[in-house]
Structures are given as structure tokens and as C-alpha cells.
Amino acid sequence: MSAVDKRFKSLGFNVGIPSLVFVRSLSRDCMLVVEGERVKGFAEYRYTFYKTRYLPDGRMTSLKVYMENQSIKRVLHRVASFLSFLERTKQIEQKECEKVAQ
Image (cartoon, rainbow, N blue to C red; front, side):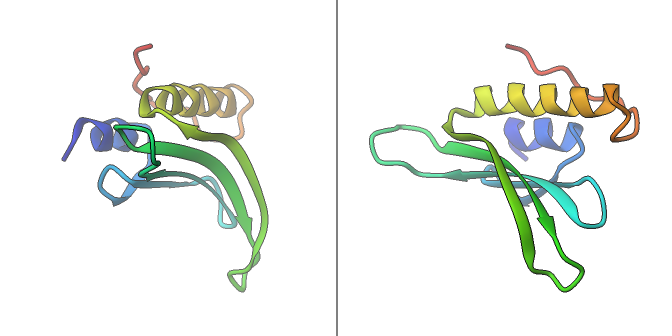
């Protein structure tokens, strides 16, 4: 397991495809997703961080993109910050989350 996979796992994400797809359910119909992809002109993977909602039948109802085409370092920092905000506002349970170094 790579360091990136371990970081996301420590933040409560499930690792879909190692180093590429990370998913965390916030509720029955809402989840946070981080997806990586190769982008021409960059030596490393570029990542997109978004929140999506689904209807009970599986259809997507909304998609909110927080970051797009960013380095993993920036995305990890933003994800940790977003989860901290959710904990402070009591939208998710208080949990021991590793602080991501800047």
C-alpha cells in the first residue's frame, strides 16, 4: 500500500483503485470522491475532489467539484480541511484524523 493510500485510509476513505480512486460515504446517499488521472504535460497524476449525491435507485442527483486537476499534496490538504469542517459543524462524527502536512 502506497503512502497516498495510507493517508486516505487514515482519513476514512476506502481505496478503490490504489493511488487513483478514493471514496468516503458521508450518508446513505452522499459520498466524497477523489479520482486521479494522467494529464498530458504533467509528470504525476492529477486529482479531482468532489461530492456526489444519489437517489435510492442509484441515479446521481448532484455533483459538486471542490478541486480539479490538482497535485495529490493540494488535494490531501483540501480533503483534510473539508473533513475537519464537517466534524466542527457536526455533520460527521468526531474521528481521529491524521493532520496532513503542508
